Structure formats: C-alpha cells, structure tokens
Length: 305
Image (cartoon, rainbow, N blue to C red):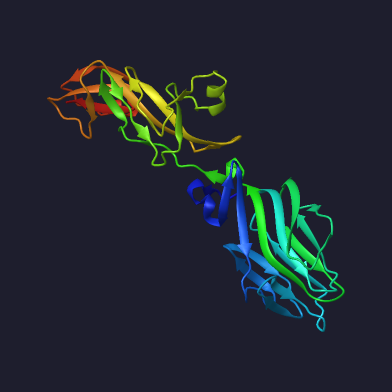
C-alpha cells in the first residue's frame, strides 16, 4: 500500500487534532453536472451519478431536481480514503419546501440511519468508529428538490502508511584511530532518533519499556562516540498522540583501531605497508608484500597513511 510523506498529510486538510485529519469540501456552482462521472473535489476524486436536473442555490448549495423535474436518487462516492480509519462523515444538506428526501452515509460495510432532511441547511454526522472502505453519500426522494452544501470527513492515516524521513549518517563509514564521534540527523527537526550500537534493530517499544539496547537521542540529531568498532542502526520516530510513526532503519559500520588510521588500498605495490581487515578487526602490518592469492580470503585491504 502506498505510503504518504508525513509532511504532505495536510494536502487535504484544514484541521488536525491529535491523530485525526479533516477533509472538507464546500461546494461551488458548476462543480456537479447532470452527466455525472468522475469529479475532483478538494483534491479527492469522487464519482457522481447522473441527474435529471442540477442547479445552484446561493444559500443551500447544489440543487438536485425540482418540483417539475424530480431526481429520485443521487449518489456521491469515493475510494480516495481507502485504508484510512474513518472517524466520521458529516454532510450539510437540506430540502425544498414540501420535499421528502432522505440522506444515508455509507463507509465500507457500515451505513447510517436514513436522515430525514429539513428545509434548513443542517449538518448530519455519521460516527463510523474507525470504519474502512469506500465512502458513499446517497439521497432518495419522491418529490421536490434537495441540496448539498458541504462534506467533512474526519479520518486517521495508519502509521504503516506514513513515510517518515530516514536518518542520514554524516560521518563516513571506515576505519578511525582510537575513537570517532558519529553524526546522524534528519532535516525534520520534529523527529527523534532511536539507535543501537550492537547491530540489532532499534525499537521504540523496547526503549519505552527499558528493555533491549536501544538508545534515544531526544532530538533529530545524534552524536554517539565510539571507542571500539560498532555497527550502528538508527531510525527516526514521530509520536502523535497514541500513534507512533517510524522511518525505515539505516545502518553504518565503523572500525576503531588503536593504531594509525588506514585508507582502502586499490593496488598492492612492493615497498608499502598494509594491514588486513576482517570481521571488523585490524591485523598487524604486512611489510613489503605483493600477494595476489590473499585476495580470495581477505575482505578489505588497507594501506597505512
């Protein structure tokens, strides 16, 4: 399922509270037509059924049908919130004098009661209790016109659908003398980094329960100092109410040697000194060697600076 960048969540929203986001669309003249079909409303694609008559009322919004041209039913539906937890759907709707239209709202397999509309524009809210699936708004009538003015949907995006920026290691991997301070950070200063130094995956839950080896930077940047070789794994976390958003885990390997630092050797030449590196350990110097058959057994060759 496609993930969404956290910084872009508000693309549909005018309100955010705790874990909930709110999509709102207030209708304008000409947005819906009698031919129906796909229509984009505030960046979300909806599908509309056809209608016998659609007009505009400056007070009540879009009008369906009339006294002389009944529109017996009309439906607006969308799959634009698929996978999201729908908290509630609110529709502002009304009827003309002597009208009898009723409104129902469906989310996934849950359907509201049939709301009997009045001549005054009013908000009808269906509390869906985290329902998931397509949303459909439906009217049925046997006489006169009915209207829609606004739609509001309160929803929550599951944590596994939100893409959090991964930390970036600023300190290059490699071999360092005696110690090295490793810097990793994210551009988003609202994030906090969690990391380990033993090659295991960091766990937000382990840190909160004070188990495991996960450490917390408390900020969007971390500066662990290494005095021995280590594989660092890190992730960024954002906590919003009871929802925890996590980035993918990144890792970097650092070799800390009590001797002089080395640089990778691209060739081996007589007269130079070299050190073998295997399993994150640096062997003793090898002086004046040109050994081709060692390549199959040695993971990395370094030359002394």
